[in-house]
Length: 136
Image (cartoon, rainbow, N blue to C red):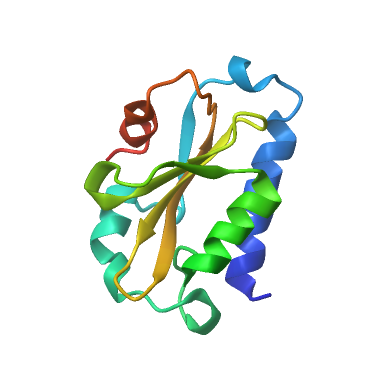
């Protein structure tokens, strides 16, 4: 596991643990950029040129092959694809059980990058809410 993997997983796990005491429906919809100080919309513009996280030399969002991203979101957070053709071509993954959600930016080479994540996910909420809260 690379440094970037550990940071992403620890950050998401911390958010889940911190808010895990509240029922998913009671959590307000909140979002965090995958890179502190850089808005998800800006990350989306630059994502095509970023290397996979395992070979990255600078701080960047978590980028990996599509299978690895899907496995991690499903296995570690119970998230499933909710909207695969969302704002600016992004994918929304969410877990109604845990109340977490993630925005993934697919790339042409069967890799993707996580650009934002958050809490407050509910199947009852319209998908546009999550894209709007993330600034897309």
